[in-house]
Amino acid sequence: REGIEAGTARLVGCGTDRIVAACAELLENDAVLNSMSRIHAPYGDGFAAERIVGILGAALEAEPPRRTLW
Image 1: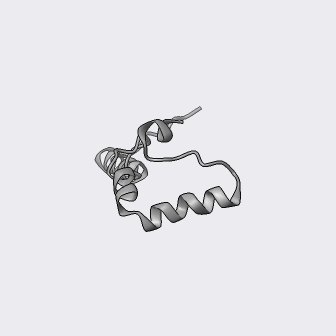
Image 2: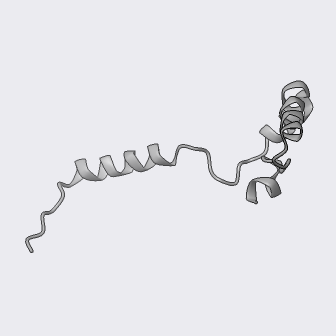
């Protein structure tokens, strides 16, 4: 829903003809493609996992993990 509201996604239905028509419009109409691709995606930039790995790696290098004795 967020992608549709933001304009980065379109709800076209599940019919083959409608899906093909929507894909063709994006492939053939640069104005439509550009208008959708320039909008900020509501789901982030796709690099969250890399940032998390970097943060965890830096934290592990800064201080060794403490072992808990149960």
